[in-house]
Image (cartoon, rainbow, N blue to C red):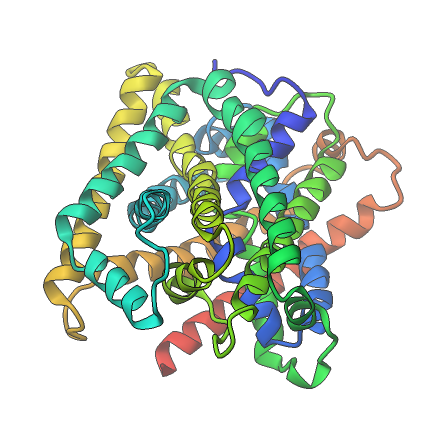
Length: 449
């Protein structure tokens, strides 16, 4: 009904596209440098091995077993296991979480589209720090401009998902992801030639164990879970289109390696530009992306060209992630038989678009009013702190404890494989415990802050 990826590498690139997003570019490099550099990377890789990759394998396994949308795949494997239909809620929660994330994600992605235009037309050249801050602040206060770029990004996402698995999602895998990798490598070379590469390399990779605290370990654990787009049905939906002959474990390990590589290379591309400007401190989030980097690029040779490429990279990374937020719900609506793919995708994109409009209007009307309802922050909190960890936790429990071992072995193509029992032990005991730690720690920080 939905189609199948042409080959294993199409799935790998599509899943990597889902995983690679704004967090890889504006968050991971900074938290690495701030939490011990190489020491943090080492801990992060352990967390990826114990949480990210095992849970991702479990999620793909359910999708490939059900061969349908996350909702119907969960319904199928639940019936197969002879369990209560309440377990189908995992699929529903993922679909809803995806739409909620898309609501605010498309707003931020719209910022990147705006900056592609600003960089390409030379409006970011020779900016001072104060001017860059005023430019970004003015943009955030311009409701109409925010809505235009939020709408444009939503339309781009609709176009890909509406085109279907082969022509739409497959296009992201075959064209956008190689483009993203190519731009990233061009920016890396630029950073090596024109930036302070040695300072950036030291910031990211020097082993500073004295800077790695327990809170840093929790940061690594949380990012290892969230970076792979787990718990929201996207990977389950993509798993449903996975070729039968593809090996789940090798494929998912490749996705994990590519996602981590993109985050590290992004750091090696971004921070040489930052460190090339004396007095400019490394940061993360919107401040790094839309204030510090425009100033840094503006003071360097051919800065306008490479600033344009950088914001294009950010927009493409966001686009490849956004299509995976809409796909699970679109697949389910198509399976009901009541809607074709294009109308189904339009309906869901419209729902997410309306949520994004609410994010823009609530933030701009209320400003810094702490007592107001900021829809943006509320959606972010509900999805990242509650819904996604719960989804990942229940997926691990379901596959580890409730699916028949023979089915799991068959889907993993792991009969008598010595590493299967190790993976099953991790999915049963280690991953759920660590995901629970992520959720509890995040909620605790929210309560005390």
